[in-house]
Length: 304
Image 1: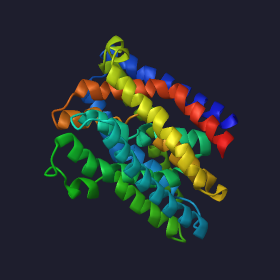
Image 2 (image 1 turned 90 degrees about the vertical axis):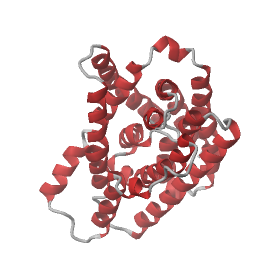
Image 3 (image 1 turned 120 degrees about the horizontal axis):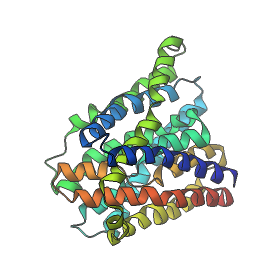
């Protein structure tokens, strides 16, 4: 119950920060260009720095084993999501499939995991974020474009979050850690992750008329799949993981049960799909997760 209260308080705090982004966008203090630039800073600087910071800890074989397990579980979760989307969504529902498969593990997962388990737990979240981009630039491109021609491994190999994990693993494995001022600077840049992410998400919320969003049946349907069906599946599947890996189990659960990825409307725009639908699914699922995630965490404590 304590973890559920913690996650509720963390989400509430994040919604308060999101409301600032919402108001700034509605008051035209920031616009689409500002939001895009903030997203780039988040992707290029803040999130990679958070990932690297999480790896700045003493090496143990147990932690390495846990990291490998987290990577395997992350691959499996995305593969399962793709199969679920294939069953529940029609072939032409491309934006819906993307929003169902991909959770907002970077924007929301990092602050949620940090608030619940501490920055060290992001160590086990990093593989989930890496897998996000691996799948997004392969399956995500295919499902949104309708063709394999748009798949490019350059997009994967040049993603800052993937390289951040490579650097982080080196920091983790090396007996001599980087100088303290270097890691403190990296940690300070990483601390921008949560406020920047919330400002961007708040601006996304402000883009769609709230009345239209709350009337969108498709947005409700995908939100239920993402916030109820997938958590129910994971609560059962992750029960098979031994208690010795309880932290990893919780990290994967929180990350996978987050609302739809903010990348959905971005990809929709990139491949000439329904941008409004993508934005409304992201916005509605983000609002609803205030109620669903604490329940999921509470159920996990009861089951596990």
